[in-house]
Length: 96
Image 1 (cartoon, rainbow, N blue to C red):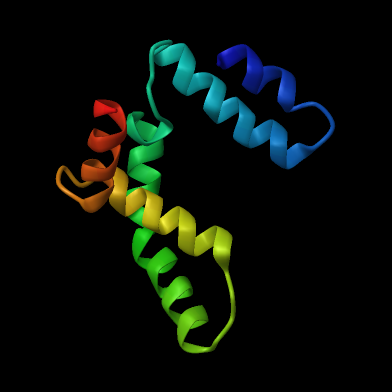
Image 2: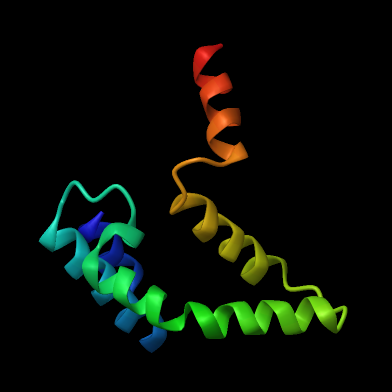
């Protein structure tokens, strides 16, 4: 995964900066299951989640569709909860 991040960064300064952070996370832990578990990424997300929620709330209240931001927030909330409907659905999929 670190090599993928290194390769993807070519051609764009934004990609390069973000990809370097991804590469460093996988250098720290090559078996990292999710970037949200990396201490640096977790800290950044936790520090910014209030603003993230405000942006999504404002867009919903204004009737502005932001599927990427709202879906990623829902994914983040699901990932960090031990017991949610998503866990039940996944358990049922695993069973069958």
